[in-house]
Picture 1: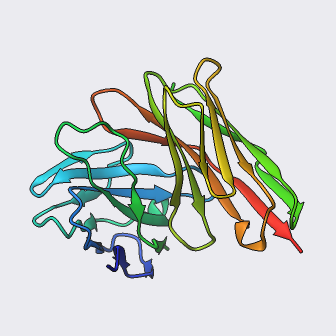
Picture 2: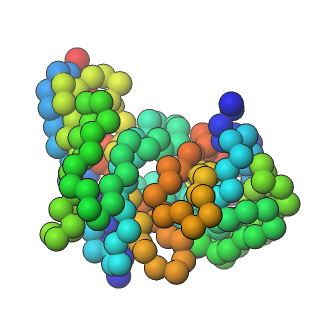
Picture 3: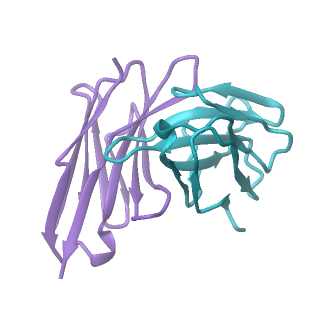
Length: 117
Length: 113
C-alpha cells in the first residue's frame, strides 16, 4: 500500500492564481481530511469528508473548496491564491466503523508546501 | 476556548538519555488525546491514542500518561536515539457534534550524539 499520497510536493503561486492539491489513499478509508500547518503553529482543519459525496467545513475553510467523488480521492481547490495561504498542506485519512467511537488513527500524507507571492 | 499547550517548545538531550514532554489542554467535552511524531518535512505519525478511562499507554520506548482530572498529559521517551529527533505533537479530540481535533504547536526534540 502506498498509504496517503499528495501532489505536488512544492508549488509557487502568484496572487490570484488557482490550483488543486491532489490527495489519494489506497487503504479504503472512509474519512479524509485536509489540514494546513503554519510555522510554529498547530495543524488546523480546513475540510473533511466522511465518505464519497459528503464533505464539511473545518476550522479554517475560507478560500478553499473540496470534492469527494470517489472513496480514494479528496482534492483541495484554491480559487484565488492569497499570501495568507502560504503554508504546508497535509491530507489525512482514517477508517471509522459505522457507529464506531472517534478513536481511529489518522494517517497523514507527506505534505504539499505552497508559497504564494 | 479549546486549547492545547505544549512545553517545552524545544529540547536538546544527549543520546541515551530520557526525557518527558508536557501537554495541557482545556478541550471540553473531552473524547481522547493523541501523541504524534512529525519528522522534518514529513506528515505526523500516530504514537498513542488514549481515552478518558486510560491513564497510560506505551508504544515501544514511548510512554504516554493522561490525567483527565487535571487535563494534563505527558510523553516520556526512554533511552533516546538519534532517530527520535522530531517534533512531538499533542492532539485532543473534542466530543461534540462536529469532528474536531485540536492540535498543539509541538515540542521540537533534538537528540545529539
